[in-house]
Length: 115
Image 1 (cartoon, rainbow, N blue to C red):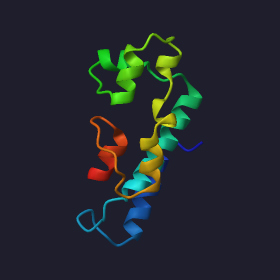
Image 2 (cartoon, rainbow, N blue to C red):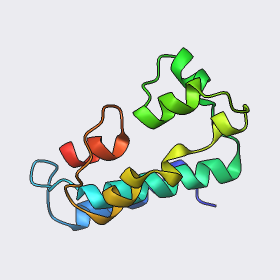
Image 3 (cartoon, rainbow, N blue to C red):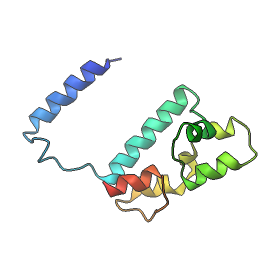
């Protein structure tokens, strides 16, 4: 598996080949950002248990409305460590539409459409 420095060199070389500097670069489409985020979260949850929602909140992390519901629900610690985005319609909309009709606070898929 390549190390992080090799990855950085590779991506730097690819960026140089485009002939664009960072001021000319276009932002990535929100659908692409959503798909990358989903893939990274899926990979992370496959390799280890995610930090629980109450732990995230206690450390100052912001929760979306659905994570907040899970946080206060009387469910097991295992349930509170699940990736709620996997079953949320915001993920599906974010991956499928450039400007998905989702508006609640602290949802990463909402943030992707803003930038």
